[in-house]
Length: 617
Image (cartoon, rainbow, N blue to C red; front, side, top):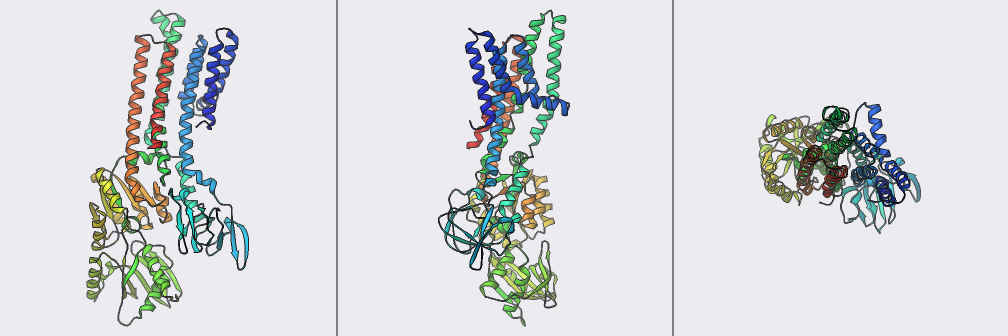
């Protein structure tokens, strides 16, 4: 904390204030010089901010009120009280700045870990290249203790990789051939040969940096309201202060000095410093806390919305499940060769990043099949893929089409059998006719049942929204323990269900990872995207990102957001109460300026420190 420049400046201002007070008994003028230095050091930046707001925005803010109050105190001989006001005000601002700095650091300290160069293998030679020159397919050598320069797959070698900067995992993860590694993570003691799978701008590291840039700009609605309120309130305080100075001697018979003193006390105790500081320290502390757990908020507004959660809606594939399904059954229609159909399907699915598509490509690879050339390939959103191979049209996707195609009774019976076993079934069509039916099983994430149970124990309703058929989804839902299942949904259906849930239950958090989840993520109160394997579209739309795909952290995140809201309410009630008591005391009991300074600035420090508690929760 002491490395923060604003805190250093505030402390120096306090030291000068104490020094001036200490020597004031034997050298009045030297103490005045030290007081002026204390005022300048502690109040310069705040005075500049206040003047800029006044000149550029033609508005008053709390900074200008505090500077005016401290100068007014000095004008009537209360140099020490004015310096104390400056010191505590500067310290409270420095603490708020420190909270912001901590939040930014916890979110974006990995930006300093950005690799600059990579060691690329070309035949028997090695060359050092800038990471911008890397393309998918390049083979890299990563030495022990070096940063991994790109997202890729380990082709050779064994090592433990520290992924804390990306996923928040505190323990290094063992990596062997076939495992995925990420740019910006730290290699351990082994040598790794890594094949690049993504361009520099598409890496998980690059996605995080873009998200961090968004996170710096957004503030909660409550903070925006407080800023608007501050402007109006500051005008009222200045108006009443001027009225006291000018009107009290005429109307109440006070002396000018008495009226000025009373006005300065009012200016100090009525300023809304504590109220203004009630929100952001708590919000930023929450963001910082969650960032250390691998949960990235794109802005403070989403902390506020997360606290209001009444329903969490999960996608199934890749969210509640591992997202890496394996083909368990393959049934080919009469007249078709199984290997030929599989290689054709894999050629088309190779253009998709969907987990089911990858399972098809993986099976073809395991059987060492040669893939034919596929052209005019396109994604059929919410259904599957289609393309042309050797001049004929092939489609791979959901089996609901069997309900609209004639002579598919046996295929529908087979589908029912597979789905009763909890498998996901896809159909392969050749020129509109069924060529094959394949069944896949995607295992439930080990942490899913506990994650769902923790949400339900908090009074949060848990539902599943999936494009799978009901029979398949119901098996996974029963294993996870969700309250309700909505199956067979298109992306538009998911959006409609999210809207319906919001109407019936209130605020909805949608958790998803795929392109088809992006519209629903946008429609939810808070869209929560899976960071490690989530699609680019899902991450762009999401308000919060689980960088390590740890769904078990959703319940603690909601709990922390709720705690932050409680602390914010405590702070606001406390701040308003102190202001009202001090204003009443000024007019009814004639409180002294030093007491007003300590009461006002002390309350400001207390609400900031109360918010900082969330850093360690």
